Length: 533
Image (cartoon, rainbow, N blue to C red):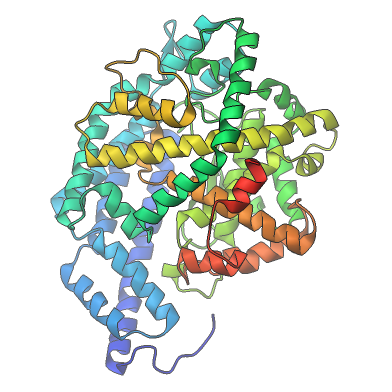
């Protein structure tokens, strides 16, 4: 990246003005971004109202830096003259950032405030079962272990309570987001977000249809297997979504309790750190900054946050002794090593993924190792070979099940923003039946769709997971050709990923990055070959 370019812009005056702009503007954005990320971390780890207010205020201040119409026009003019790839890419990032903020300041403020208060509500909410507050982990334990259908149904219904409570607020936010999209001449927020993420909506829907079609027979066969086991296990022919092992039926429901035996006597954090060490990557710094265990008021989900685009990278987890949490810790650290690996000579603006699908590919590839027999042999040295083989089968089931869940989410969000006044719960369950092939219980008048955190606070994001899974399988295919092994735990793999995937940051588009890493465009083929044949 340390190249000298004599005339990055055709017009030397324009080049000088652009460089002067970067020198003045980027430090302001960087400083405000760090403040916002720290406030976000405080909110998600405490759920405090003051933290929600602080996050909302800083979010507005950051967006205001990208709100100036005159600057936006100058960037468009500079873009016409730029020829240097790094200049062009910085302009691309800036133009997309400015464009999404060319809406009235009052509207930006309302959106930020609504998002912050929703984040606080999700962090603090605890549903009730038989008059007692329960956590998400406790609900998952019931759905994983309980055999009594009545107890399971109570837990499943409790997992939806947050949706009923927050749905009206989410719909207010959806309307505000649609107002913002229409102000920028987009039909709705879903279409705007795809465009600003450099995603062609026609291509996205086509590639999802292709994956759905090519994996349909494998999924139908799996559903029959799952239903047969559920009927046998619960001694009933009346199955509901509470027969699955998670609230959204997005995870493999078979043999989860048995597989958890693999991790009963290991330190998940230490095992994960050792795993990455064998790749030649030190995650000790990330773990030192992280918040790893469950407590009151804390966000019950998991994520990775790069505070400063330097070395302050943190993960939030709620670790318990389960395969789910081994996978989750590996996954979030996968995000972390991606962020650690950016070429430090890149400009600050380009020290980020070109699209979330590329960092998801790394995180998903890492999370898969919790279910790969070869990797488990190193993660859990004393593990049972029979259980490791069962984990391999579970990985295939998990991929098929999760792919259908992403199809539900993507189709729902598209319709949510197209027409938020329709019967959204009916829409939700019609998509569950179509893609997941799970019968809808009587949930008329409920807000089940709103129980999914991502719909309100990580909108138009879920499609990135499935694109990331496709990319991950293609990366796995490439690594196998180079190393002759499907195991990630060797330094050669770490070096390849560092050089090809992490280092470029956002110096190229996600399309160009994929071609550089795997030598072709992203398609479902490697994923279908790995999991659906």
